[in-house]
Image (cartoon, rainbow, N blue to C red):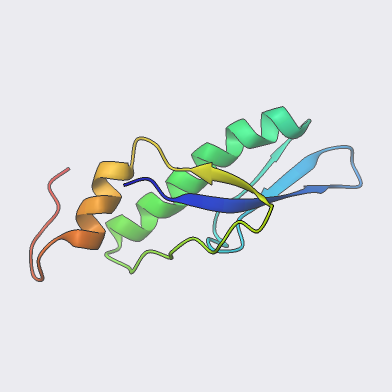
Length: 94
């Protein structure tokens, strides 16, 4: 199961674009333009979610997009699915 997290793009004063995820505040990144920041946003989201999985924290559910752009995690989807749906007291094997 892939979750698509809403991302907000904010133009900074220094002519860069910042990407933030309201549901995953640890995932923040920058880029020279919207295309570049969206590429970095995928990595930032996956890194932040991987930290949650590694620390055995409850993963945030994505809020409704409501017209906002979204970014879906890719390579972590198996690990996240296992984290969300594994039996109690079981371990994830990476």
